Length: 308
Image (tube, rainbow, N blue to C red; front, side):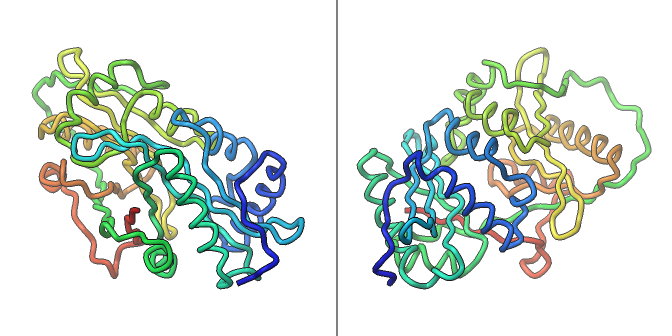
């Protein structure tokens, strides 16, 4: 343990030091976030969340900021209850200060502060096994499970004469009020989920300074039937279309129309692989339209979901 280090709640006088630390760590660890992180992105993520500002703990060695443990607030639906919750993001300690007890000290102060604020559940998605073990062994977290990604090759297809469908899919620049009604209608089918209200969706995707998110509204007979959000990314050097969010009626013709629409869009961008996080809600329908699991050995990235 480094006895000279002070662990405390973030204050605005720490802002420049926090930004400098984040730039340094993202760059030294060669993280993708280094390519787009700036003060505007930090303000969006830490200050403009519709559920409230971040709860951040920092560590200082004299006047040098050497660590951060940040949480952004969320609303979590869990088995019919709506709970105040948080997501751990951008956990970092300067290289020379690692394995000296700062992670545990910041985590313990964070847990206490979240409890004072009435936050019931904390979530994290560590991509490294040592990070996962640190949460579990030192801070009382538990592993919910591994997150799997489903993949589908996107191949050029011969246009076929199709029967006229009453399904309309259009790109949107903001999520309308109807999305709240859609959530109210479908939430009972989802045992665990972040609350999908229009304020959260607009902030998370369409106000994101990093950009690149394409949002689409699905209508059937002029009534809202769902939405999805797509982003074209590079993962391990492979260009793919990632469906980052989808909520729609669980009907095969709707999901098939969504995937056909995405396939056409990706082919026009010379992208030949589509991916989505595995979900029990749509797993059967996604399998029918061609999505498959990859073995852990072949999967480009692995994540675990842990909670406290």
